[in-house]
Image 1 (cartoon, rainbow, N blue to C red):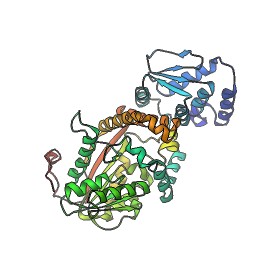
Image 2 (cartoon, one colour):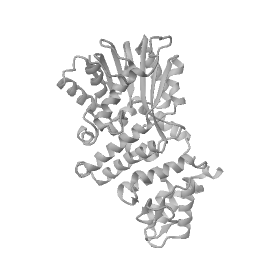
Image 3 (cartoon, one colour):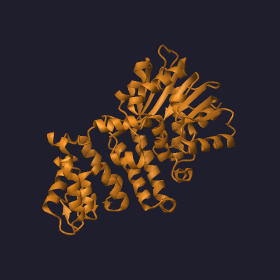
Image 4 (cartoon, rainbow, N blue to C red):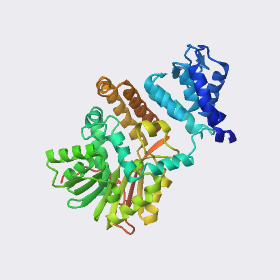
Length: 428
């Protein structure tokens, strides 16, 4: 593994640019022997996934695996893939220089299964550079820029493929045939039940999205909610919805960072924000949680996670989700342990997120023509890749979805079992 320090596939970093230029500029239509060798090495590094590669001349590389095929439209796409696969696969798929046959989700699942199972698949190590990037992107100013990049694309864009409440987090499917709307309602209820909310209590929410959970808590559980978010578009949408639905007197949407939360509350909740915080800021988040909860307070954090600490791909970081990082459970404990908070329950909803993404991708594809008119074809292909890749990551078991329920220490009036999560809800 010593060669890895010199560059991917043992290609010294100083030679990458030269090789890329030579490969991309060549007008020779033949596939060179060294190119076939490099593709073989690339596949080996990826754990020998069950996929085929078709070159620009129509020839196939070791076609042993049936319909799952990556097609390289030109020589330059191959050399770009070899020199920096973590960025250039996504970029060249977005522009059409790479095509996938056999279904994008199925193809990516094959890749992720191989990475998960192959001992030599640790080819995307967490380097000092990636740790520095995570630290930089979780500062206050960077956090605002990151949220703007992803969430302020426009409410009209997200309305096309999310549910009626604009829930952009994992749904909870109580039955196999539940619709997306039913499953997102069930997720909101699942969170409220775990927190055992009671009428008249106060709740602070860190990272409220378009405000659906706050509206649900206020409407169905009779609580007062203070919800924080740094996305201008989302906060404006949430405030308008609360006003239209007669909930403005029970919810305060605050356009501010979670680090500026003040006051004391009966419950703290965060759904889908931890991925933006950065591991280096988890102790700060824990301090915010501890100072915000009353002595008998409780809280819930709902977050994408992973089994082993790995950096997010360079393409996802640059093009789609800057500053994002899904933690391991061990890393999440940095929120709770330093503050002496008691973790009462952990639930993994991984397969529920794979199903959620299946719905989102289907609806996204249904509105493909409209989204292309709003943006362009490259944008559409990039987001298809992002959604398909996310679905494949969850179904392959690379990504997890954790709900962690916690309390202040010494709180004894907690549920003895999980039975209350599945009993009919009483209206408030």
